[in-house]
Image (tube, rainbow, N blue to C red; front, side):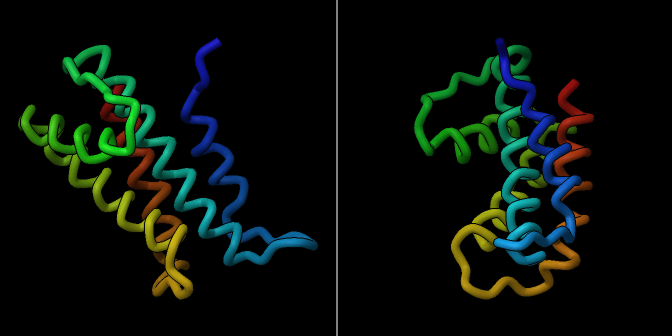
Length: 122
């Protein structure tokens, strides 16, 4: 059975601002941004393979290669690539940086950005 990458975005929405006995709202919000990126990236990657002749390498380079491939397709795909790059940047901050500036604003932006990418890749 093929995984529905949009489930990551649904999970992200559920985690927004939550905290639990073993994790903080910050940990949840960082995870929201990360899952939003992967929902959008994997959905766009699969779409591009099926409809835009993208060929994945199954390596970490696919993140960069997908953006470059989309940029080469012109409008609206160059904007999708730009939004993927924004999400990737935010995800890297949330996954690797000790302090994330403006996390509260980043969370809804990441969800909206991922939503837009998924809508475009239908």
